[in-house]
Image (cartoon, rainbow, N blue to C red; front, side, top):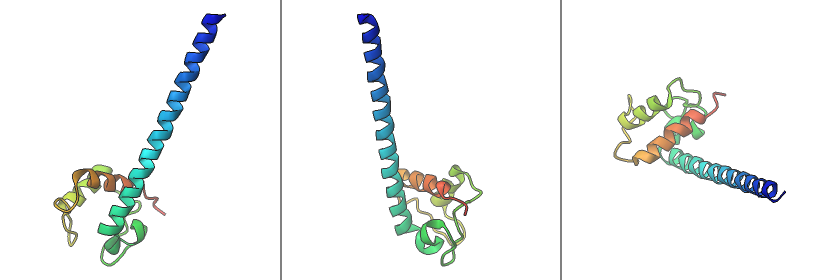
Length: 108
């Protein structure tokens, strides 16, 4: 009987650890999304509209882009057309966050 209770206790602890990890991971993801939104607002939104949901002053709508995350990353690094390169303006981890954020935007 004690052996069963010990297993049950370990399983309970494992479940608590798993749920805690999941909560912390979600909080970290939410913080990264908030940071990406700030970067977008400061660096991109005046050309690409309010958080990429519509075209802005010269830049296309980014929500629903056909580029994959790597393509978005490369465009931010290299620039394209009248869009400047952000390679020397943003840190690499910020560009990665930004590419992920842009790909997460709903197409409509």
